Length: 149
Image (cartoon, rainbow, N blue to C red; front, side, top):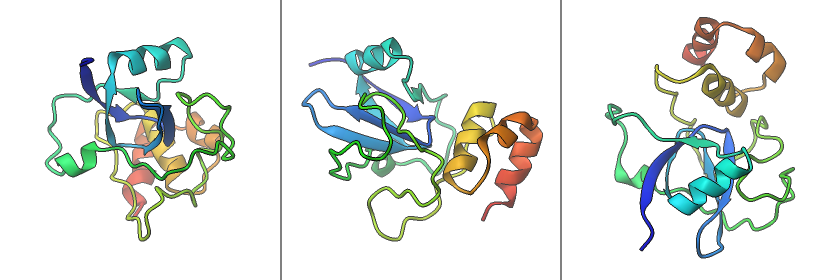
């Protein structure tokens, strides 16, 4: 059995193929279990979209969130470039859902998150201009996140 590791999704939306060939979609902040082959494939195309989580200090994390959601969408008509390991095209669309009804807002990122992660979270949870967000300081991005319900 291939070795697997848990990774936290850093892109607003990230699509990938499982070893069985099933297209999966995961969202910012979720934990996904990936094989070394999947990680290498994502790194090779420069669109991994995940990072190894720091030692879990998040009291809200539980095993139910460790599974990436599979919305059954095998169509890449959401603006993706056809590469299943890359981030979907318009990941800033705030109306995008995980395919389940009544989704709660995604969990806020950890304080140790990079500026890019904060920008991705804000793009996924509001109507912002990416260029304006990227021009702001990290503290200003945190102020926007804290103001989000």
